[in-house]
Length: 174
Image 1 (cartoon, rainbow, N blue to C red):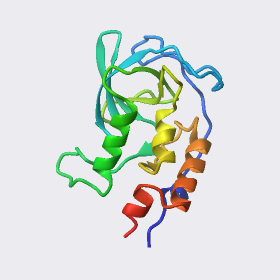
Image 2 (spheres, one colour; image 1 turned 90 degrees about the vertical axis):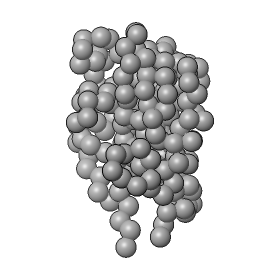
Image 3 (cartoon, rainbow, N blue to C red; image 1 turned 180 degrees about the horizontal axis):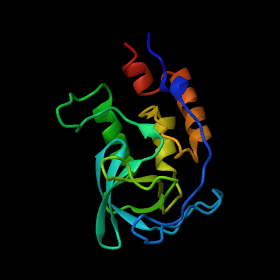
Image 4 (cartoon, rainbow, N blue to C red; image 1 turned 30 degrees about the vertical axis):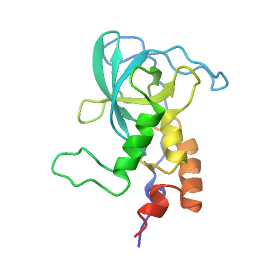
């Protein structure tokens, strides 16, 4: 029996930080109603469905999108997972090389692999990339408290995608 990741969700308190662990200011999105955002990074490339490489003031950083988990395509010593190539292609369609981005941080700055953790928005139109990937069925929910600022939105999007068998929910159910 498949147990949705939603059932394993643990929620805790949230504190948003506006600066990186290196002391460089990283602005946060302003209220959610605006359709444009002041960029603080530029997309270099999409690594896979939930990881991108960006340029921040001349420094390249790998960024892990907070709150989501797409099927693996590039993990060493691991097979390509069901719907992984599609998830990577979808993220690439949302974020062409050179796309100006706003990275919004949560409590923890980096993961155990040293990747910057962020909510990613396209600066031109304010598209919340993490949420779009979940809503379109290309990712499961993956929450690591205390990084839970948008968890309610992710839960709702994942439930809806699963309910209508969107994307990986229909392709990988067996």
